[in-house]
Image (cartoon, rainbow, N blue to C red):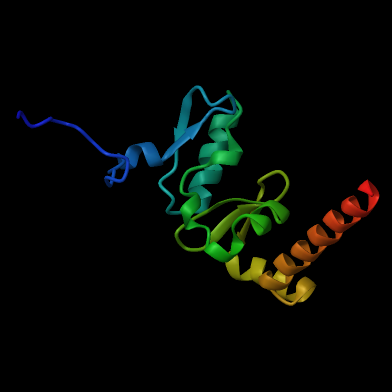
Length: 140
């Protein structure tokens, strides 16, 4: 039987071209409009400024989102909001993606307000449970 050349299975490890990981896409997702290597958040800010002169960038899918520490993902990154984070732990934050903030300062914000990131996540979990219980009561 001839060996199948180039056949790949879904569990095979896939190597992604690093240049693809650096792409900044247009807001409509169609065009590659810029690049950022994930090293320095100031470089991203400059690149976004350059891009915004001619087209809207897709801020919700900026490259190197894996730089964001695990504890600040999901609920925290939406609440704060955090748009991107560089390899030194400096994040692009703010409603208008206009502030560079170290991850330690973000954690201190949640320490002061909720006793920590986990306290914030627990508050959200309890609020969700209460909302679901209220909906169930109203359905009866």
